[in-house]
Image (spheres, rainbow, N blue to C red):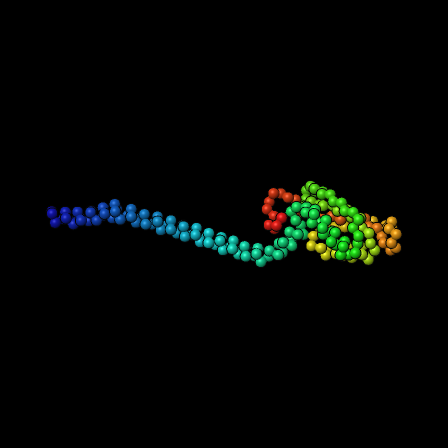
Length: 184
């Protein structure tokens, strides 16, 4: 009987060792492998996101000049001083004499932009006025001519006309978001 008991005891001890010692260690290793796979997938996802971000950053840097142009076309603040300076420069380049300039900001509800209305009193020839309009059209900033009144000049110089014009410049409604250009 001792002969049959010894192999049964060895087989029982082996089964006990498998269930108590080896299977829990195997389950721990299996859980660790699953966690390692999950973390590897998370790492790959983050690396993929980083690559997409770097590609987007590279595109932004490549198109920075275009973004700056768009920022000039439709800035996020009215920049009245820059508009006045630009109009004065256009008048000087076209040969017009700028007599008076007035500005007023209009907040347009229901749109994504606001309007800066500019009133100008100019003195010059008709050809100079056409040149003024041409230069205003070529300017990076968007200007819309809304009214033009041409009259006889009170000046003693022959051939000069008096021009009263109203133009609109536009800017985005400032919603507290960051600007496209860091210079604003």
